[in-house]
Image (cartoon, rainbow over all chains, first blue to last red; front, side, top):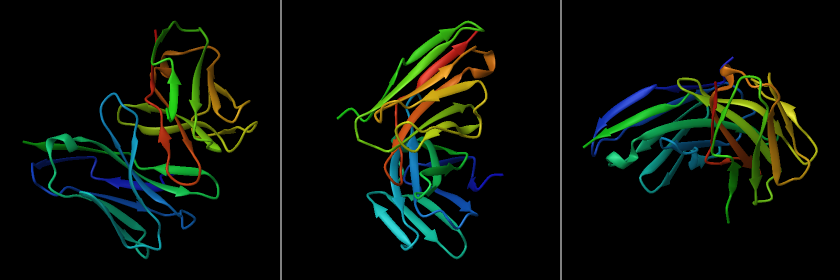
Length: 112
Length: 110
């Protein structure tokens, strides 16, 4: 039973493009929604996160959009650069239980 | 501030051998986790701990054991390694929402 569905599996954009990665969840107990960035050979690193009482959060070039009624959230990367090429994971946390459910990841390639 | 430190970074085991992976965090986090990452499989939770002295099974616990004797350390043991346990293992810790991951241990079982 996959509680967090992430799409697309892979994404290729040109430099300067705005890749969008989408996630959907089912469990209404989730109360924190982080995104992670992972470069080859490294561990995932927390990139940006949002709580469900907020519809949008922006940190630098990264923006999370959150739709509580649809149980969906997405990551947008403005002015993408080749250095943004990485695997991105969404997650949904039940902070009371101390557990996180991860999406399957999206491999982003930004072409020069 | 080291965050989450995993040792060793690389290891090659023969089938049937045992080993322990060590995870240490210096952020006073209550929660700690062990994941494995395989190509095309995302992150799969092996075991986790919600506090010192507690452990619980994740989605793929078979063949692994864990211990959390001290709050800052979380050990993952393989009693009899199998080729199917060839993977990259990540430890993570959390206080409440959002994980800090270690840099991983790449384990090969031959």
